[in-house]
Image (cartoon, rainbow, N blue to C red; front, top):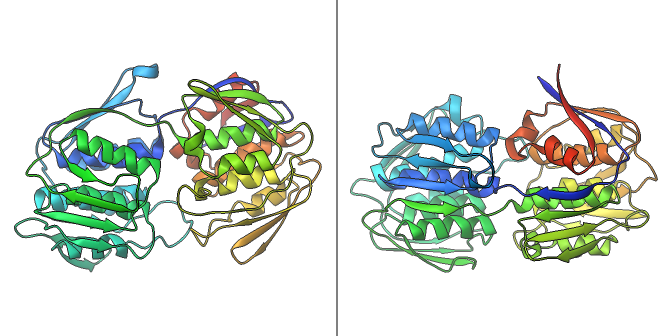
Length: 423
């Protein structure tokens, strides 16, 4: 098992390259099941989650291959034949996004047996939205013994699907399923995240007929088949946000390459209120941390373009050293404050009141051994460790490896004293 060790107190400088988006590449890989031809994805990150999903896709008959190194690297998904329509528990339980294969399997093979999902324990994240949407499209679904057993005799049919609340996962699954359905599907209250737009753009390159990307209403007219395509994955706005917060927390001055400010949504104005400077350049964003302590700033998580739930925990890391009291409200997932107790181990002053964390900034965090509890919480502990005086040891970093590509290498290149040890 690996641990990340950080000697804090060093300002980040120089450049940090932003990798391809984890939240885009996973549904893009799943989209490869919709076509018998090869889907080539360029600029993909090398993550534990992409490796896990590759195993799921291979189980279903896909050939998944990585190629290249550096900027031209990527992977391909070629599902000439669906040799199997069963995604087993031992694979799906490792990562929630594996469940998304349900939509493409139903759309292309008209049947699927998919284990109920696993992943980070940050809330219930019910799958009933997915199932009700597919039922509206004509699927017959039975949930038994931990599996979703679904059939669509004669194929899926277009339908109107009114999502009761915004769900990125449901939007991905239903949009993919609708591309091969007979007739037209309207999805209302759809997610507008950049990753949804990225996947929709790729599906259109494969021959899908989709209107309304980036809006709350998606109209998908089904086609008989999808072709292969070549697509460049968008840069990871969540990784960019975490690195921006790390630069700010260490009073650094560094550039994030390959990213535009607009994809950060509400994070950018929140950082400015906290005393940071953000400057957009041609293909990079320069982040300058506060001259003194950050200014306490309240945030509330909301669907895009609101404040991203995936950046709630990293922003709390910056607020741990802010001057004043900040209120951080989580409205997306009900159990996404598991990092609080680990931050307290580093000297943070945080109390919880229902869905709100009340953070009273302290002048100095102190290094200590801590444990990552989920993917985004792990980035928070890295930020806090970079801020802290002395040494911080982070265990269970397999959470970190699920969503951040070579994070210790990138931060080291920007001056951080951070390394990995096997224990």
